[in-house]
Length: 287
Ligand code: PAF
Image 1 (tube, rainbow, N blue to C red):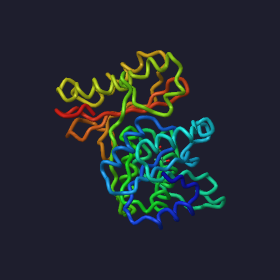
Image 2: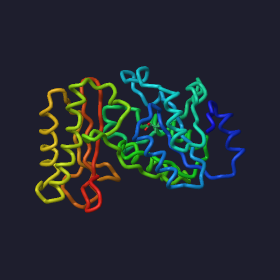
Image 3: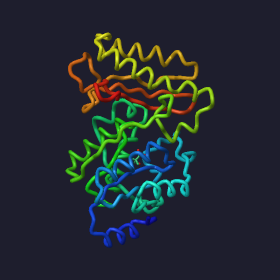
């Protein structure tokens, strides 16, 4: 496995390979969720070079967010990449990704105003800008993004559509702990009490999704109320939002019209903001 620390090293690597590429962009602190994305990338594109990126992107963190505290266990991350068949890892430093006088960025003007974007202004512009740069730097044909960051996945798909990136976006299902908590690098911030409460997010979303599918909840408002009450029963939980949206436009549903429904929440446990989402259950999947 090659470890490429600069755009020049990446360029040399690309020049030496005739294979197509599949990309898994990450901010490191890799857990089983990321590893499942690496495995999915390998399965989906067995004959491509699998390139992972590890870059804690400063432009997607707000001033009071955890950029400095964000975990950076580089050696352990590289070990996981090796174990999951990565061909090359790109690990640039910020100075090599952003010029001091950089004056151009990508602005997403619709999807990112809702949900997480409402309380994280500029976050998705930072994500789009770095992902576009990684697409350009790697000239990849395909890229894998986790469904856990459902809004991010929708925004990236929109960017690929609107800016004509010739790249297949492959969604990766959320990987969960045995009690249902979605895997996240931020779970390590939780206290014991918060960790014991956090599975309520998935439980509340899943129960509401099942009730919707069974016709037991007649409106999105009723479903949101049920989810809000379940989460609020945990003393450490403070809800940022609970919403039920159209999975493509991310617009809040006023009524249940079709099956393209996504239930989402962002909830604080102490200072740690966790997100989760589910779709409606089908005979083959539980979202
Ligand atoms: O999902 C993430 O880890 C990040 O937002 C991404 C896509 C790697 C961009 O920095």
